[in-house]
Length: 347
Image (cartoon, rainbow, N blue to C red):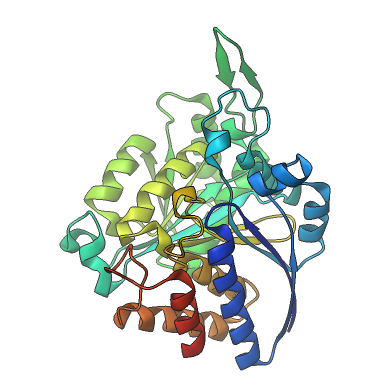
């Protein structure tokens, strides 16, 4: 296969981990006889500094015309610490999702046997945890009507039946490929938008009689993820709840640097680590590149190339078993590029 990949390193540690994802993809393509062409674009604070727009039209065109996007991270303290900033790096991420129609964010949460002691939860609680959070990505409060004044502010949690239905069907299809258990997370006892979610979910559940469907309030789901993460198989929820729950789920594995994600929908899919830009570590080469590298595995799997994805997962597993990891997992640890090179050579 001939791949045309848009690479958006972004801010903070983004360029450091992005380089490792590119390296690993090159190695896999060499091994399996694919060709790959990388084209680079700017996004986030980097793009604001250069052109005043966190997701410039040129970057959008690059993404639109590519087979997939390998994205890293956005965010910078000079914008985070300025409440009056009119343009922010994160607006670039939201714009990318909206313009590419990326309504489904898929975040797998898995544990690694050799890293159970790295999790803040007891090993007997998390052993065997393996579930997928599917977050609706282009609706809800992040994109609803807003007002911000000196004395009042509001955000609108707006959803339509079609938006709810399409993300639920993504969840059901994932559940069919896994353990056939779907949990719909909402707050239907309080929120009208959640009651729409639950109504539509009950209707669609009838189309998937082979999948067990249950419903859980978001506060209960947050608690259950800590008490019994092995309960979940596929979890589907709205934008704001999904943002919070997926970050909570990420620490189950022991490091946010371990988990990848995919955003899919109407146009070019985007593959990225779940973590942020970690600006304090910028240029220090201590960031864990594994989440970025595993996002490349998800990219291959999206294109129905499971052997390529498995080659990456096997190499990551080998690096963890060998203890060849960054400082977040072992002290003193290895540098970002050293871990990337080790994994690439294993492939």
